Length: 439
Ligand code: ATP
Ligand code: MG
Image 1 (spheres, rainbow, N blue to C red):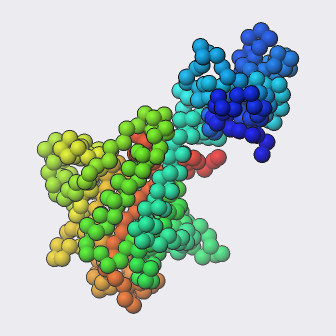
Image 2 (image 1 turned 60 degrees about the horizontal axis):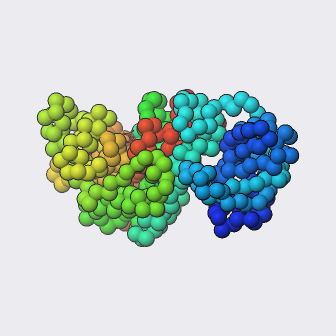
Image 3 (image 1 turned 90 degrees about the horizontal axis):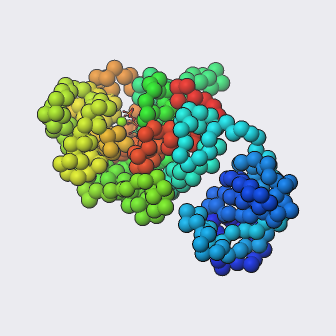
């Protein structure tokens, strides 16, 4: 390695040691013959002062240039210690600087912790935007959420699978498909691993999960939709009903919240986020939700889905009533659910399905699936879908398929909501949406 230490690492214990640091020039302040250079890397910042014979040569060194500095670690006089610097108790007396890469000026975006640069512009230069500690924190937490997700499902006995993203036309409606040409055959990018995760329950793997890309040609401009996102999907066999599935979603989201709260303290502090982990997540019937909304003056017909405003309102109501930022809405009307959601016995207008809502935004949809082929054929027909054309989906239910259920969540949504970000694009390094295909 070029360096002996990282910037955040040096303490008074290294006093008088010769060290080499590398990083970005956070700032350079010249006062007569003396120059102070704040060097920054992923771990923190170190204040350096240049040996006076270097000052002239480097006084014009541009911000964000990448440099290597070598010198001796010095204890700083107590009265000079700036507590806001992570390495407040030491500084580096530099007697050699090597410019590894000089940054052009001016920079295309501001790299200040508090910036007024518009999100669009920041995303155009995302790699510069990520140089801000606040933004780095978001991606450190996101990486943890990913890691905890793998940990959770693995320890719960789910098998980690990867399913194809190049697919024949989807089982769900074709409206959100990205179509492509597959050696002359029509194909599309996977909108959901739904079919495959059900298939793998039937395969005898019984409990499976996948964390992978999901593609949807979402035409709308919202703060919660991307055209490419990371899905967290699971499916499990031998469920009694949809509550078994909800139990897993509930345990999972509490596990993630608990772990982030405990292990990402520094990042949460930087982002000014206080996490609340509910003891229990309330499960409200859709009819009850609509009643509560009606009391607040929002009428939603029995056959309709909740709209974003309804989701926000019910979240608030539940938080006041139950003290939980999360809630399940259960028993969605059949009219707004896909054909493969199971219906409660003898009730053709309902489904054994649910949504999880967190701080006013949907995090997950799940359900017990219909595994009885006769019923599935009937339900597909009602929705105007010809299952006979989807032989490989139909086959799943022909040769012994356990009663099963599952759910899908979005990693980007979880990150967005958990960190109180105002836009899902803040929660993904390089977002894809209607307008954006670069960088
Ligand atoms: P919404 O109603 O918010 O558009 P959906 O009901 O169409 O979502 P599902 O098919 O239920 O989405 O997908 C499961 C989960 O995947 C959602 O609950 C959400 O967390 C996430 N998700 C869905 N669509 C997107 C998207 N376009 N961008 C980011 N995350 C998404
Ligand atoms: Mg949904």
